[in-house]
Length: 141
Image 1: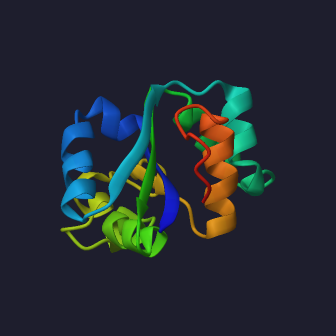
Image 2 (image 1 turned 135 degrees about the vertical axis):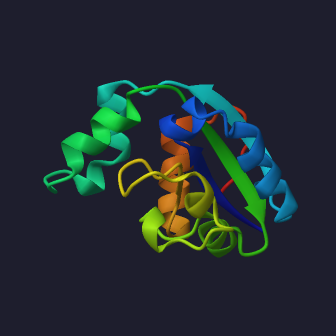
């Protein structure tokens, strides 16, 4: 059993796509083990995306991720990370197949609807960062 983080980003929340995205997650057979509606502060967003600090898009990413509420989820299932990443589609919605979440709901490279961990180590860090033990009942990535 593998666990990963999924984030429904501010543009998808604002666009009222939470239910459709959760339905797609469940249709994929991934279990939702934790979910929280939250709004990141600039400091929280900077910490979460610290791996991108210094890149040309970092400040724009932080502004975007703090522009409205997000929904953070812990997903679980066999091969959860690659399954979630396939369901999301490529980061750039213009390159995403229409049946993927980014193909359906993404607007641009910045406003791309969803986030997912790229590796088990990243998932463990992101789960700890966003949930800090809340709702996880000792679950590990």
